[in-house]
Length: 286
Image (tube, rainbow, N blue to C red; front, side, top):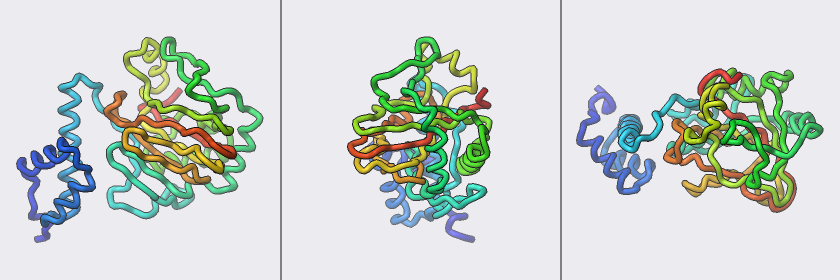
């Protein structure tokens, strides 16, 4: 019988894992400690994920937070170097579990990036944000880019990219909003914000009628600025460089800051930044 089959995840082990998390130790540190103590790595990962998920749900219920919902989830449990996205292999460059952040390499080709920019450029206008009081849209001083939306499935290139994304993050194509392309010139930025819709705002019920909450975001980099323009996650001190063809994915299973999904686009200091964003909803987006 293998070690993985004989090692048992006991209540005492679960309690120890919770205590380590409460003490501020990262998942990576706790995993290394368990493996060093003789735990099989697969068993240790299973124990940590199950225990911490249950612990967070218990805390959330006690604090009156919204219930967690299913989210898009790239299949990276076995730490693959590449994922099959249907029509191409996409590299997994970096992964974080809490928050769930995955950096992909080579999601788009140089030709696809150039084509998206060419198609989007004539349709750009000042970027808007959701107006949370009514559910409409408004100009927001925190977001100084220009942008546009493609209709879902608008042309062959958009359909190909949307199918690739759906397979990569294991989420139905129909649950995605239309692909948005954004253009940032020097000095422009998008200050840290959350992509989910705040349940406390009066306009949120109107927004949710179109497909429920946003539960995941994929940002694809189409052109590289000379300086600046990283995607930042302030809560975990992470910055993702805007390299053409690469992308950063993150999910958030409840509409609350506890997801640590606060993120922003840092100011472009030189050159121009182009990105394409795909927001993913709970249900079919209509």
